Amino acid sequence: MLKVRFRREMRREAPGPLAIPVVRGAIPLSWAEAAAAARFTGMPGRVLDLPGPAGRVLLVGAGTPASALDWEQAGAAAAGGTGRAARLTLDARGLAPEAAVALAAGACLGAWRPGRHQSVRGIRLAALDLLVDSPEAAAGPWERAAAAVRGCLLARELTAEPANHLTPKAFAARLERLAEHGIAVDVLGRKRLTRAGFGALLAVGRGSAHAPRLAVLRWRGSFAAPPVAFLGKGICFDTGGLSLKPAAGMEAMRHDMAGAAACAGAMLALALRRSPAPALAVLPLAENAIGAEAYRPGDVLRTLSGRTVEVMDTDAEGRLVLADALHWARTRFAPRAMLDLATLTGSVVTALGRHRAGLFGTDAALLAQVAAVGEAVGEPVWPLPIGRRHREDLDSDIADLKQCATGRWLPDACHAAAFLREFAGETPWAHLDIAGVATREEGEQGPDQPTGFGARLLDALVERHFEDPDRH
Image (cartoon, rainbow, N blue to C red):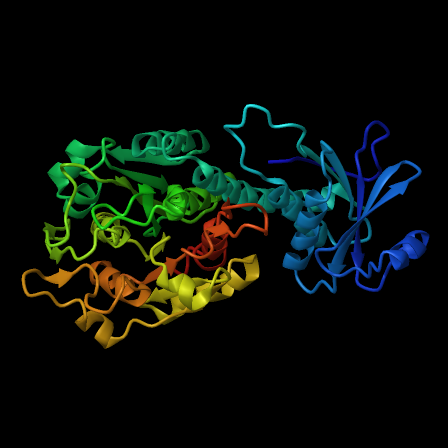
């Protein structure tokens, strides 16, 4: 994350490029002629790079900002336009502290790039000086915003890791480092999972040389209440199992743990800002691989709940590991609400593209809260149905239910949600299928750029709806 300093005036030594956010139609007079020549009007996302007497000046289009998200986008555009500069100065003087903080948050998010495993990384933006009227007024809002940004960036960093570096064991070890922030971390290995009866999670991970894990992260908060529970699909690599995926694009399946990464990022954000609300993350971690012990289509698995599942497609493994995780969270911790995030189906991408996550659930109030918060933080969702027929399609002749529908149906987002609902019980529950939004397409910010989608949404949801001790 960028090192951010709030200043009243520019540094005298090596200040780097100066970025000036420009509201549409309000070009500074000293740059009006150059802007007119370049047809720069302040449209959002546009950056005009100009030479100045003291160095480079970046005019950054902010459009007609109506929310903090608009200022975030301008900050991200400024960071993206710096080229090989190591430091950026962003002029937010004259703006409200909340707008200035949003510019800084956007710059931190926009400056992030994967590259931990590159031998030669070159010069990258590392520091941001934000010019403001009152550094003191911006300090409080920035502390809150920085926690969410750090949580989002943790989710991106984990999602960017290649599968040979982020095995289930290595993923669990990375999560254990969160203990330094006050998060209690418990990791269940194969022996404990077997004793407890995690039949679905163990089956999915059986074909891999790397045994599955269940990571449980707990933030105790400051008042006594049932926790809000996050659950994240943590498939560190997904070959599809015996229902093998096509070779083209399989390398992107290292991102199939983005749901677990987002939940971990949300937990970090809560800890960094010392949220008073108790929270919990239950993260099933596994590799869906091919081997002599791999589970098969046609197998019947006994899940942790005791319910049996007929396997129809080993590439529909995410719903299996989440079934065990949902039951564990619900019965062991009695949460106020459960929210699971998963890169679960291709069908949700067909339905919603790469613009919104699919939202399913059982509690109308919780679903409305998730949708509103998603819009506010720039992680939008769209409600999708779980119909009676979706559940009927999962009826099995040899088990309690099928894992997914068969016949002309491919593994489908609505059927997956119907399956997961069977393990959520009466607890208010929301399911976010983030398959289309966990990474950005090539051409936006590079190929398969992780977004950290969900980390900020969960953090803001807790802040707005779960931190009042009188409402639990």
